[in-house]
Length: 224
Image (tube, rainbow, N blue to C red; front, side, top):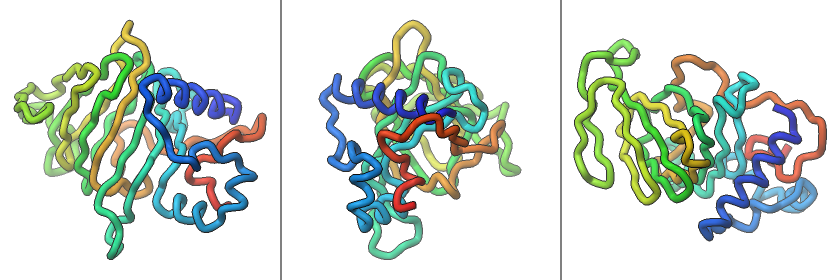
């Protein structure tokens, strides 16, 4: 992605978060120069994978396959004294896919905070690490048990959520005609470096063409 695209995504996300009165921490608005004055905070956020994240999964088709994320809080896996939870706020566009994946460590709630509707599709995982095309999926939405066929889908409206157990294979996208979706995530510790298992993409992070200066660094750029 071009840096100008990433900057535009961040500004778009900030507008949508403001539209539902969701306030980000002070450092979400730091310029690169302001981060340079906060080396301890920058190191902390980098180590904890906290802050801005914009990805096209290395494919250059952001509108079709991409995600805007902001991680507000997070621990570090297997580190004594670290918090055992994480929280994110994300933007998913209409028909913009977060591709098929699962987590071995993280259990998560996906919550529609505002905007349009979120479509979530689900499979169980086989013992050899494939999508189980035969078994029903048991998943809870706000505590209510849903039994879906393999590959079944949920359509979550604002205020609704789904709890995804470990190893449940899932993808999600904004429902067509409903507008961008503001999506929250409350989970166990999030590790985008070691706990994402994708089926048809290898790149979690985006290669950046620096066509303009960043307005806000991404979390993996902090302290560098």
